[in-house]
Length: 400
Image (cartoon, rainbow, N blue to C red):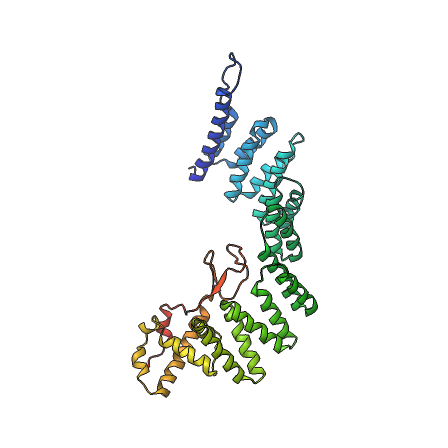
């Protein structure tokens, strides 16, 4: 029995056939010219479609395109529908068949090449899609769309230098800034160079990321990581503190590194002063500091322990499981013992829950992803500032 999508496909072609007949019937023609009959070839093709004989329908329509120029647009529509239905092989055959025509107009050839490139991209044949998009990016009317597609391909293939080149061309042709996107491409190059221990190249790429463009804190974060790797603790701390001062949400990435450096340098007192100053300057950051400390199991530092304690005692959802008022009435040592147990339970829960969420599409992940895998936007993820409570919490917190 024909499916709903088959009826939709058949309906489209019936509409196109009827439209062609109507244009011939009511368009400009001589007075004595008879109205043209409805193209019987369309009806044959529709019969194949309605009987779920897709292969026969495909062969029939491919034959039609060889004998009638007026059917080419119909075949473009057919190829697009096959692609959207996931039948990419059929879409490829249709568009290759159009391209093979020796008498094809230049504009139609570009349209067919663009459609075929999208088929290849949909099928995951990135090298073939890249070749066609590269060709179309040079002088065709699909230049902008081709360069956009090339950027996506180079992102998937992690060909960041080629992505920079395509994006810079796209900025000129498209008339819009891609500064943030290009900055992230350079940061990707910097991080790849750092993994190879080529720190000179890594610094040069970070500099390019931040020169003449709106700054992304990713550049500063990358420079701080490089400073750590090269044992330049002073520079690393300066950069991490600047990141926290200028971009609050990145404290989730910077705080564990700051604590590690101060601990390694045996300068916990300096860390205490720095964090106290930060909390006084930005009281709203207390919950994010507490959450970060819980997730990364950071403890033994009085100012951090204090914000974690306040966080737990003032968390309204936690109060549904723990009698916080009764807890605060206990002697301090008993209260601390219970809070330690609660904190461990929260740490397990937070570690098992998504820590970051895209502000554009809602995609969640355990770690910070500079490009959202779902919507492909750059720098749209933000960390959670609260533990995501659910029924697990009831089983995780020990009776006190």
